[in-house]
Length: 185
Image (cartoon, rainbow, N blue to C red; front, side, top):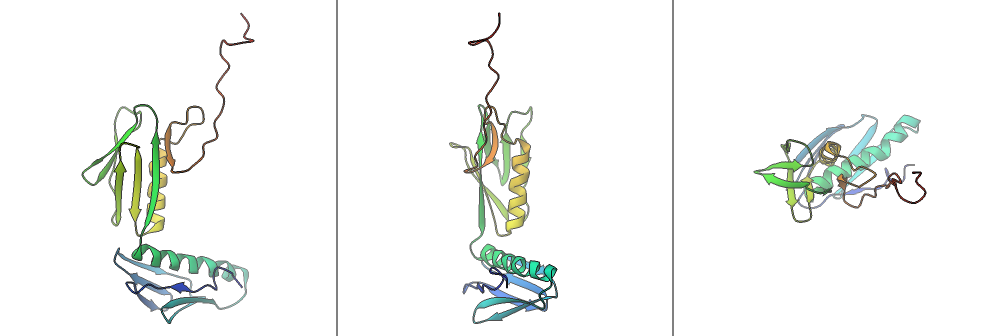
């Protein structure tokens, strides 16, 4: 049996759950999420806990068991506390600032990149340390948005300039030797 799938999902007091067959609706202080799951998964609410069971031991159904439980857990966590992804902007002359509720990135191009947040997502910027926080209740949406922001100027391996996730390690490469010792004249 799936070790993740058999764990119950604890539901906080502030979160309301509706289960209609394979559709789960979760509503909390941060927002509301609805998701369809496979009909092979049995989803039930008992004693403020969501339990996920599977109909058989076939490989594709076993694979969905833990995934279904993890997605439901992310829905409950998202609408109750929310998710945050932090990005660092590194480079001489690079800066980031807020333009209303939009994010403006100045990362070495002739024009700034203006990013409009989708519904349920907000940005926080600390311009002194060039840190961007992407906040929201849907883990998939903020993860995709953070990935899209990183793709604007991914970190390069020689100087380390670019946009990276906080705590991300960039493998640095040595530059070319140039006219130092051992160079032919």
